[in-house]
Image (cartoon, rainbow over the protein chains, first blue to last red):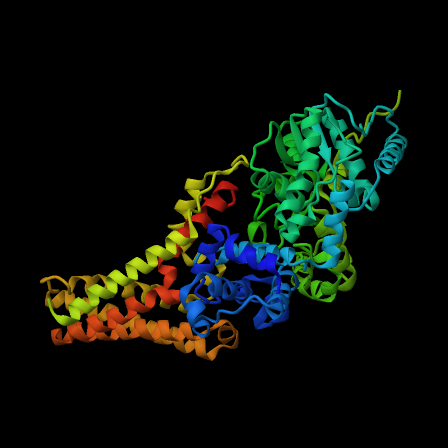
Length: 429
Length: 201
């Protein structure tokens, strides 16, 4: 048994979460809204079953009947067995995608309740090692992949040089650590390590839009694995790094690169865990692209993306972030054959890799299995390209593509927009 | 005042005090928020208490329409029974036509309650999340509805109705029936979340 977890359970429950726990009547109508349950059919995977893992503990310590007659409501002690069950429910069977929240007939938030479970597990030191490693790295080095500032500078310099050569435009730039710029464009470290094309695409778009912007070599990381772990202290500390950097640079807006949880954790959660507002706008690159298109700052030729394209909606950006239509407006202008998945928008299914699941290797087989729904959604569209404004989803979709033999290309929105730019860049001389 | 009326009144006071204490224990759900809103909290709350109740708004309702309708009928009957229970503490009595309407409503609710209980017992996934409280709460509500139905048809059954109601009220603070107190809070928070983020409302 864990004393810190018990302390959190006894005294640290947010009133909103308590109201949700009290409101669940175990009707189980939420079952089919969960992609994990739809994929495995296991009664333990329904949102109601997962909520009950937390509710049983809540009743034991917060209700009279739970203390006196625990058998009545299934109340149980917080012991090691309960922590094991909680780990399986909160980390192993839930991606915190919130689809059950949207569809709960009563109107409670199972994802919020499972967040409490994760917070208790974080207090008990039971966060999956892969997630915790990312938290530790971000706290120690400023980013979850431990990329030193020198490597960032070298990579960006190389990307800039490559971009100038490929476009033939010596004025294209990937500005780094430039004070006095209007925007700070903050990255997912995976872009630097594995997906540099998305940084080049952003550079081309900013160039075409005539934007004043900069990257930063330190504290650039928009990801926040402590948000997945529901370790609020670490979450605040990690968010503070990039927000402080934006404040120090004096920018008008912090632009969050294409990353669902990065957007949610900075745009919606960071102000709450840090208990303050910020003197700059926090905006998704997706929203910025939409503004550029609406303002006529980007000339796009959709015929440059002639093959059928579909869109995967990242849960944290769309269902819990409210960025629903901008990516659609942009894609409709950047691709000539854009088709929706069914269901879509806030009703879309999680790819299966959310909630830190991609970093929790112990659940890898389950993660790929739960992605079956997404794979079927993609296949039904007949699309050759799947666009998703989230690097976490991209990783999962790449794996699903291979595992389920989808034969599609997975791309960011910026990459598709960059390909549609006309002219791509001014010719030299 | 009859002895059963006194029992009912005492049960009502105990239940109200217990539920009020439970509500006080969780504290205020309203905290200042710092993230700039994208949409309107008020619009989200309005949505939560209006169109979000329509089956087309929620996959869980649309995909389980008979259960959802049974749930609505069950709750409509419960509200009617509780209202009538309160009236039994006064000299007022329903007219014959009103008693017939009431009886029909309670009969429908009773049938719905029993059907929901049968469903809970017959589905593996429902049994997996069920505890004794689910059965006891349902049966106590069903007993109250049945007694109310009897009292609507035969006024001599009012004392039985009052005793069944008293048992229900005394049990209410102990288990899932507490949701009557927290559902509004929960649903308001749900609407506020989606409204503020511009997802709904």
